[in-house]
Image 1 (cartoon, rainbow, N blue to C red):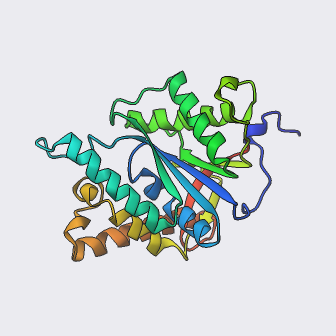
Image 2 (image 1 turned 30 degrees about the vertical axis):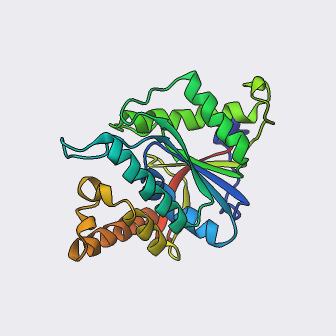
Amino acid sequence: MTNLYSDLHREGGQLPIPQRALAIGAHPDDIEFGCGGTLAGWASSGCEVSMVVVTDGSKGSWDPDADPAQLVEQRSAEQSAAAETLGAAGVTWLDYVDGELEYSMALRRRIAEQIRLARPDVLLGHDPWQRYQLHPDHRAAGMGAVDGMVAARDPLFFADMGLDSHRPSAMLLWSADTPDYWQDISASIDTKIAALLCHSSQGETTMGNAHEGGDAVTAFSDRIREWAGRSGAAADIELAEAFKRLTP
């Protein structure tokens, strides 16, 4: 039976290494957690990797006395270092306030613009339909990426933008409840971990105090490897990142 919903239909098998890939994350470090191994593997094979971070990261601390302005500056530097570690060509910041991101037509337009500028073969982002996703920024950034992709591909959306429309060949959504695509990251897991460790400001919040070094780094690295092992088990891959794959 023909699938009437083309955005859910796809050919089987692995994606070829894209010439260009664009990842869109709500915060600094979201991309590294969600698809860092995939991007690192592709970049090492010649893919031009670009990253868009939607918010400024200004609330990414459990310290009530933290200076948000200083945190923004620190997280920007950490993200740049992580992107360099992955082999990405660069990072674009949309600079929405962390924790206050709301889905809007303006957000859709800005993401569509980034897609038309980067012209990726593969677009990656948060799965906005993940059940019980608590963080509002993740939900909004994911929906912005999906809807921005639709706007970017269709020429009558935002025609005043002055940019040619662009249709990626695939979209991969991380943190999906029902993944159906797995990317082998066995050769790039160390790079993913190294990129994550660039985000030292997040050591307390998401990395088990890995910023302190020593056993904490080992424990964090082991946790990422265990996670990749569990993700890959469904596809009989030693270490993998799992995604929901859409065909734009």
